[in-house]
Image (cartoon, rainbow, N blue to C red; front, top):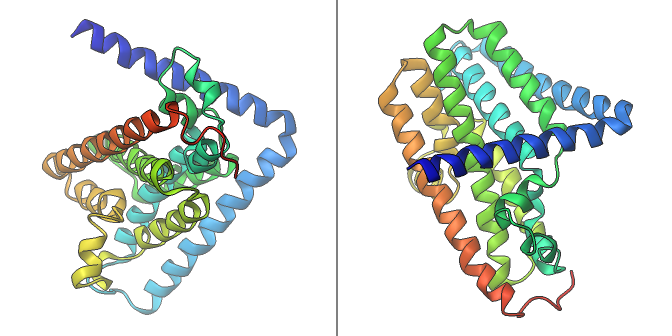
Length: 268
C-alpha cells in the first residue's frame, strides 16, 4: 500500500514539475503566451455571452436555464483546459507513434504514456482554465462543498478528455495514422459537451455516454454539482477510472507492437 501511494505521489510530483517547466518554456515568448490565453478567454466568453443572451429571450430551453448552462461551461472548459495545458501532447500521440518519436520516452524511467502526454503544453488550455474557474467563482458563488466537488469533477473531466485522446492515438498502433481524426473527434466531443443534454435523443444520447463520453465530461458533473450529490460524483469518478484504465491498457497493448519494430520505420 505504501509503495502504491509513493508511486502516486511521485507521479503527481512528476506532472507538476513538467507542467512548471512547460509554462516556463512558454513564458520565454511572453507576449505570444499571454495573447493566446487572452484570445481563448475571449472566445469562450463570446460563446457564453451567446447562451446568456439566448436565455434573456427564452428563460428555459428543454428544461435548462442559464445557471445550468453556466455550470456546464465552467466544468467543460476547465476540464478541457487541464487536459490541453497539462497533458497537451496527448492530442499528438498518433504522430509520435507514426514517426517513431516514442523512442525518446522508452529509454527513460518514467511511465511512457504519462511522459509522452505531459511533455508538451497548449497555452490556450490555460485560457480555458482561467475562463472556467473565473466564471464559476464570479457567477456561481460556490459554498465550500461545491468547491470540493468542483475540484474533483473538473479533474475527472480532464482525465476523460485525455483518455479519449489516448484511445484515439493508441489506435494508430493498429490502424495507421489517425492524427487528423483525433483533432476532428476532439472538436466533436467538445461541441457535444457544451450543449444541453436534453436536445439529444435516442441513439445520439447513448453515444454521448459511451463512445463520445460527453455525459461524463459535463452533463453528469453539472448535475452532481447542482445537487451537491456525492453519489453522482462517485459515478463520475468510477467512470473516469474505468475509461482511463481502458486507455492505458489499449496503449500498453499497442506499445508491444511498437517495440516489436512494426512501426519504427514508418514516417508521417
